[in-house]
Picture (cartoon, rainbow, N blue to C red):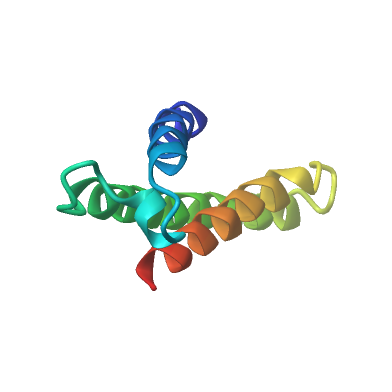
Length: 94
């Protein structure tokens, strides 16, 4: 689901970048220049970062609870997506 949403916005932003190569910030703006889409993207990235962070910590607790029998990927993979979403949020925040 996350990848579908990000791919949709990325496709839209690439089309905007091709027509408007003034600066990097304008690549994330909507055609009318209101920035509404940018605000929605920031909220989505923040929500996904929080959700993936919770999943990462709960996966780590599960691995510790099972005494290492469970794969460490239960905690690492969601935390990786958390970091990716958090960095995307930070880059749009500036």
